[in-house]
Length: 343
Image 1 (cartoon, helix red, strand yellow):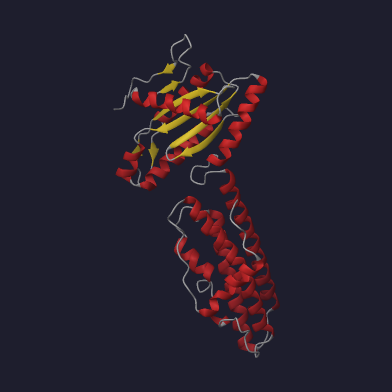
Image 2 (tube, helix red, strand yellow):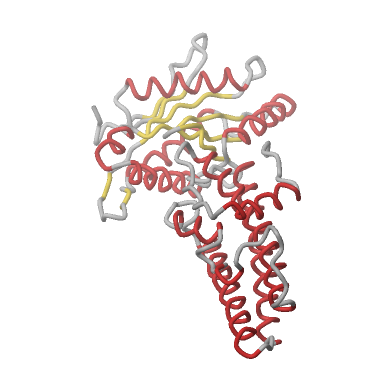
C-alpha cells in the first residue's frame, strides 16, 4: 500500500480538529473503488485517535468533575455517538457497498455501546457523585473491543487493496502482473505449457445503460463467482479491467485450455443473473486465449489473447477462440456456440 500511514501527530490533530466546531464528515468518495477504500482507511485511523482523546476526556470528567476542561476539549456531555466524527460518517455512508457488511455493522454497534456506557457513567456521576465500577469496566471493555475491531478492518481493507479486487473478489491487476511473470519463468524453465485467457462479458454496456450500474456490479460479481468456482484448483482468475477478466491456466496446452474455457462459457450462458429487483439477466461471454512462449513477454502474450478475443467477438460472440502462430500448419482451434448466437 502506497498511502502514508498517519502518524501519532496526525491522529492527535484529527482528534483535536473538533475544537474549531464540529464539521459533518463527507460521504465516501465517488471517484472510484480505490478512492473509496482510501477514504475508509483514513476514517478508521481517524476514529482511533478521536476516541483515544474522548476516553481521556471522559475519564477526566469522571475523576475531576469540578475541574475546568482541557483547552482542546468540547463539552463532553454532548459527545454522543452521532455527534462524533465517526458516528456521523457511518450514518452518512452505512449503505455504501464497501461499508454495508457485517464487520462494519458490528463496529458501529460497538461504537454505539461505547458511547452509551460513557453517557450512563456521566449521568450517574452527576446524579449522586459516584462512579459505577461495573459500568466503568464495561466502558473499558467496549473501548478495547472498538479499537481491536478498527485494527482488524484496517488490515482487511489494506489486504483487499494490495491483492484482491474488492468488487468481484478476484485477484487484482497489480497482483496479476507479478504472478504471470513468475508463471512464464516457470514455463520456460520446465517446458510445461501454460495459457492465458481473456474473458469479456458480451453487451455489458447495455446492461449498465438499461438496468443501472448496480445491476452491472451484480453481474460482475456473479460471473466472477462462476469463473472462480469452475476453473481448476490451480488456475487463477484476475479482474483485468471493466467487464474483462484474465485467467492463468498452468499445466495446460491449447487443447486442454480450450476445453476448460468452453466449460466456463457454457456455465456462464446457463446462469442468468438475478438482481435485487428480481430481474433475470441473461449473460454470455466471449473468450480468447494464447499460450505462454519463451519468445514473448507477458504483455505480448496478453496481446495475442486479446487478438483471439477480438476474433471471438467478430465471429458472433459467446464463443471461445484460441490464438495460434500463423506459421503453424494447423488451423486456429476454436469452440463455437451456434445456439443463442448474439448480434
